[in-house]
Image (cartoon, rainbow, N blue to C red; front, side, top):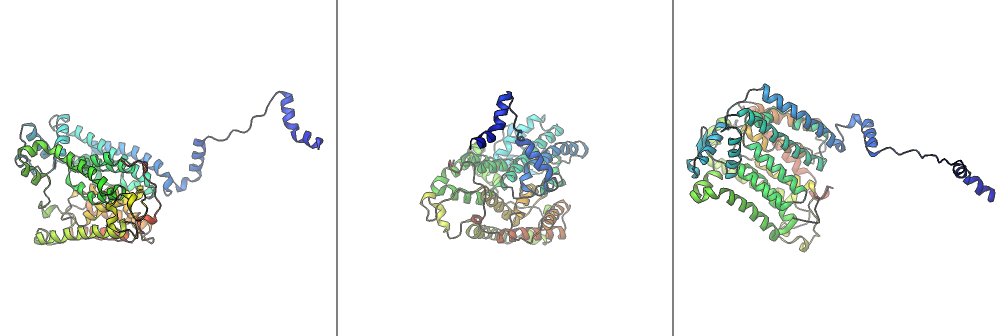
Length: 451
């Protein structure tokens, strides 16, 4: 026994006797381990969602150069910028009656937030004359929007990284809308994606405030409103949702106050004109219809009814939890029959993006700059569908057909029909997707501290 003990401890005794202790092999650093794993999986980097952050970081850096190249090499095209400057110049000169504010392309039809943002751009760009500076500012808007969108995709990890090339670098139309046309639509969507990120982080009140700012730039952001209302009711119930809705309304009231005090009916009828008539020559989605039908009010009512019915069906059958009555959402989460579960990141994103997409499907008309309303959400919707046989190549093909439809100018019967077919496929895939609660998703960062 003694010999065994001496034998088993002899190496340690020898080290101590010699006064030198051998160093144990050092373990590789976490960074080196990640790099080694990345090198081993290099052929899968574009396909495995855990590499999303790496891929989008590279693409975002590339986009800096792409935007600079587009600004310097591709000619700017004047469409609405001068009209925007004329409209805000009227406010600067003291006109607060919305019915008297107009530009080259017609009357001012955007809420007050638009006025303040483009008034700032008016001064920054030397009364709107320094268009090149305006293009660089919109390039910053583009990069910020892309950063916010990529953060959403990195949180959800649903879409394979190779798809993000089509989300940024490959779209001529989106670059054009931002840095060659300087429309107000990108500003509204940048704020919308900022609000979405706040919702994912659990800052619901602040997110509602930013969402309302987005609505104040352009009314199209209201297409997300049904989904946002559903998420708020799911997370808080009716009583605790009311203050957040009140905040949204208060921001609209505060921003519009100078114009409401002057001519309230004029401001509301112009800034939030739900019955606005669109010109047939600019339509992207209804070119195959005769013009008389496109302009017909009954056709508009049919589209509105289909929009509301589809939203209701999704709310009742796809968004709510199986077995739960929709009325239960009105109650405090702790008082519901089915134990309350905090809404997950995937659920928030899918409900918001689907709500907006349904509105796009049944829109009375889509103009070319409206592409940015849903462009960055399309990959998420396609990879959220419930049709397993819808292979990666087919999904990419649908993205390509949609891009082609929006790049066809003027639109044709074929391009409009192709757009509707793609919309229908996506909508059916979303309908066939498994219920939200059957999916595992990351919860919001502050699920235990609802704000």
